[in-house]
Image 1 (cartoon, rainbow, N blue to C red):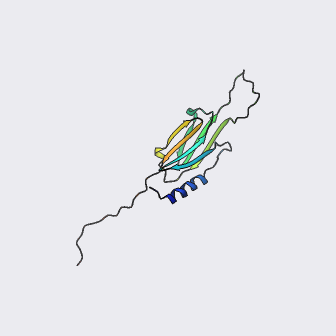
Image 2: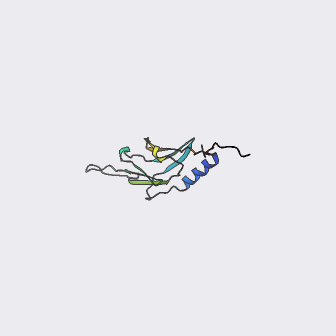
Image 3: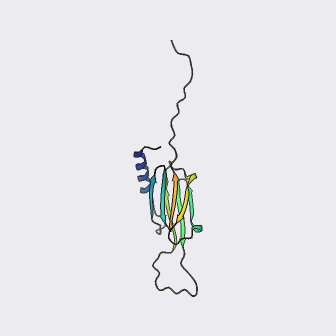
Length: 133
């Protein structure tokens, strides 16, 4: 388990390095509960099957597209809601176990849950020998 001071520092570093790669990024929240780091990304109106999530060299990338209704019989009077592709990238800490990332989409929010790796305890080998006189 990481010390609480490291937890706050790690979270601050992670959220400070979040950036929007396309200018049409989805808004997100990042937070930690116990030993799991969570990222909530707003993706209203997106088909969950069309959400693409990748992790490459500790860079998490989420891509999705919200499509506008089309057809010969559709005549728009007002179209204020954003459509088209959206993406976000987040630099992840080495302390996160991205192999166990879990993704859930509910009510227009994509929630990613990433467990924190257990902190390695240093091991000291004790060898048996004769006592020096």
